[in-house]
Image 1 (cartoon, rainbow, N blue to C red):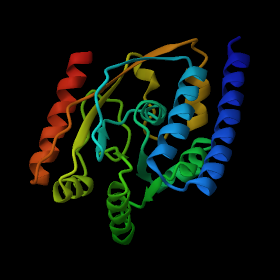
Image 2 (cartoon, rainbow, N blue to C red):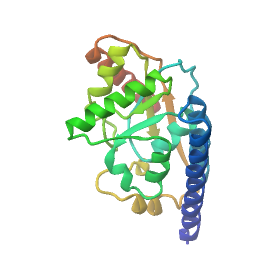
Image 3 (cartoon, rainbow, N blue to C red):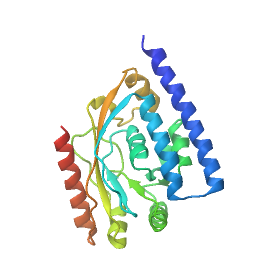
Length: 239
């Protein structure tokens, strides 16, 4: 009996995402890729998605530096809405996101940086794009696990962006995301549509997101270990 409600949510998600894509195209013509652009379009798209899906967010507030990289744990496509709403940035994601219905087109419009993780040429191009974004004072969000996991444990972190942050002296902000309903996690071979219609007949669900203190270190291995440790501490505090 909840199917019509879920279908209505799906239609609203489509409409808002299409509006977002059109807005980005207009902004891109007017002002190009600027921090102001990210903070307006991405924030409002993310907040609209959370409202449509009935997601109640518990979060802390921190002051963001001029240049920064956000490193969150990765549970679901919902993570993108959360980060877009509260810390708009350029997302770095695997190339497969292009095939996601609706979300792929919407996030690509927000200047998503796509990477083929098994292609060295693509990895090098991605690193250069991250450096360019940071040089332009446009924040970047990278999921260091590289894919989603149901948790509670974290997957091994990739090295690439930590090396950039260490080389450039850019602050990295650890971020912990916890879903009170573990079924909100989107993992494995589960499809977006299958997960969406199975999960979002529920009127509302609660998510907690916590941003840690910015961390800077010249040794990327130490930086990676510190970020991982901070995320684990924040996740443990949420359970």
